[in-house]
Image 1 (cartoon, rainbow, N blue to C red):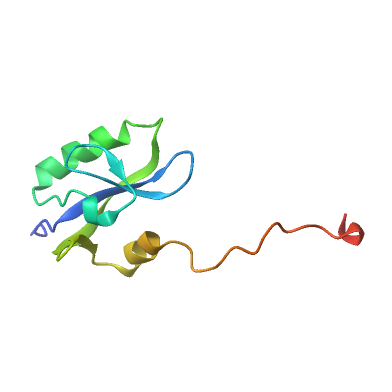
Image 2 (cartoon, rainbow, N blue to C red; image 1 turned 135 degrees about the vertical axis):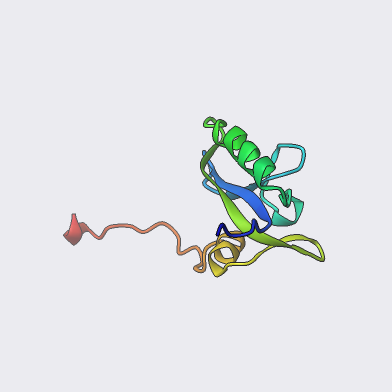
Length: 103
């Protein structure tokens, strides 16, 4: 028995910057998950995913991610997507330089 379709957002990484981005209802990309289109129809989600994946000059790693409707827009349902949305868990350490003895 097939699983019921759960709401999704289309997510990817920006090709040049590597930032996590989401597809909006207007078929543009945003870095803000709350602006993403929440897709509730499986056929529509698959078609939009195919169209998004064709934008190889803008994005890489396009896929559907589970989400739910939240107070301020879509919210992730899996910790992986929450981690991607909030960014790296470390802070900038500055340029790492090699010591003369390690060269």
